[in-house]
Amino acid sequence: MRLGVPSLSALQAFEASARHQNFAQAAQELALTHGAVCKRVGELEKHLGVALFERVKQRLVLTPAGAEYAKRIRVHLDQIRRDTLDVVQQGRETALEIAVGVTFAAQWLIPRLDDFYANTRDVRLHILGRDQPVFFEDSAFDAAIYFSTRLWPGMPGTALITDDSLVLVAAPRLLEGRASLSLEQIGALSWICPRDLPRVWDDWLASLGVHDASAVGQDVKPLRSAQRYDMFIMAINAAAAGLGIALLPRVLIERELASGTLVQAHPHTLANPQTIYFSYPAQRRDWAPLRQFDAWLHQAVETYRADSADRSGFSRSTCS
Image (cartoon, rainbow, N blue to C red):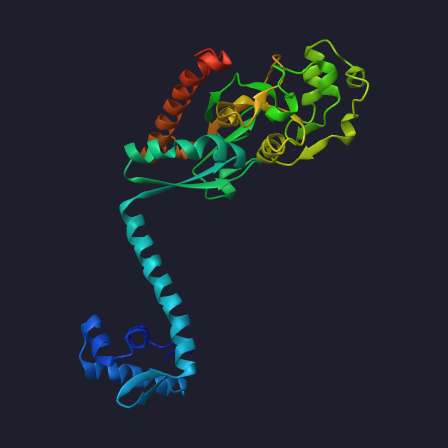
C-alpha cells in the first residue's frame, strides 16, 4: 500500500467478496482462485489494521467497519469504471466545446440536438452556458454562439440570424379573453425587463411614437420600478407565470408561443438590435468536427426560419 492507498486488485477482491459475502463467488466473478481472493482480502485487512469480515458459523459476514468501507469503495470503483469508459469513448469520438448563451441553449439549440446526433456519429458536443465574451486564447472553447451587435473581437465567425423581432408577450390570463392589449392596458401592467435589453420598453414605445412612458395609461409604473431579470430564461418564466408583460426575442419563445404558454399581447413588434453569431478560433476554421457542426447549425437555422416564416414573417436571407 503506497501513500495510504491500497492496491486496486485488493479493493476489487474485497468489494466483490463484500457484495457476495462469499469468497468463492467473488473469485468466480474476478476469474481468480479462491485462495487468491482470500489472500488479497487478508492483505488489505493487514494493511488497514481493521477486520473487514467475520466468520460466523462458516458464513462470511461483514463487520460494521467492513460494511461501511465496502459501501464507500463501491462508489469509487464505479467512478473509476465510468471514467475509464468515458476515456475509451472519447478515443472514438471528438469532443467539441461550445460556449452558448444559457437561454439560447435551453430554448433553441438543445431541443434540436437530436437531429445533430442522428446525422453525426463521431462528434460529441459539450454545451457550456456562457453569455459574456469568450476569448479563445484564454479558454478551452472550440466555438461560441451568442447575441451581440457585432462579432466579438479576435474571433472570426458568421451571423446566424440577423432580423429577429422583439414581441410583446404575456400569459393568456392577463389578456382576459382580449385579442390584444391597448397601450393603456399595457401601462397598467407590470413590465418585465431583461438585463440584455435595458432600453427595450423605451425603444418599443418610441417606435409607436410614444416618447414618454408616463403617458401610457394613468396607472403606469415608472421603468425604474419594473421587474428586472438577469437572464432571458428568467424573464420568459416570469412572463409565463403571469408576473407581467415582456418584450422578448421571438427566437427564444417559439415553443411558448406554439404551446400557448405565452401569447402575443400587441401586434406591434420591434427589430431585435442584436444578431445571433457563431464564432470560433481562426486556427479551427478548417477543423473537420467544427465544419460538421457549422454546416448542421446553419441548416438548422434555415429549417427554423422556414418553419417560422408564416408565423413571424421572416425573409429567407438572414443566414450568412
